[in-house]
Image (cartoon, rainbow, N blue to C red; front, side, top):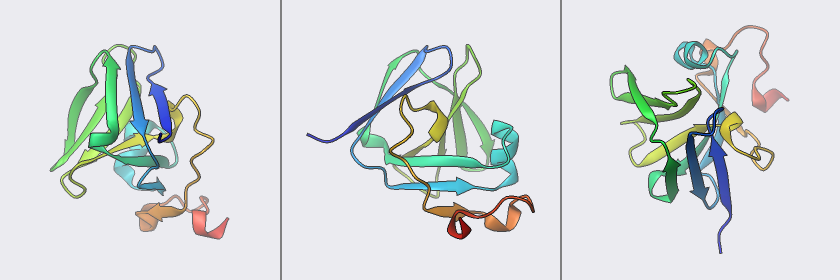
Length: 125
């Protein structure tokens, strides 16, 4: 049986379970992720959408840019997911929405050219 990774928004209304090993764990440094999350960068854990089950309330989606939609909880505002035409069939979750994020270690950086000057890339740590 494959591993299951549970998560939810802050209020617990939107819940999910992702099955198996993630496709990747990466820190994204783009301005869009910073604005969406309020953080210096965002750490994403990517799964095949077919390996994701939703329960409770459905996430609400916002088209943040061409070909991109970001999911969040309509009740508490927690940002949850990123989906893009660039990676069809994938759902990327912010690492902080997992009940136990400890199994996920970022191995790469994305959009490193947009990072804040004081942030060290994962590869340098």
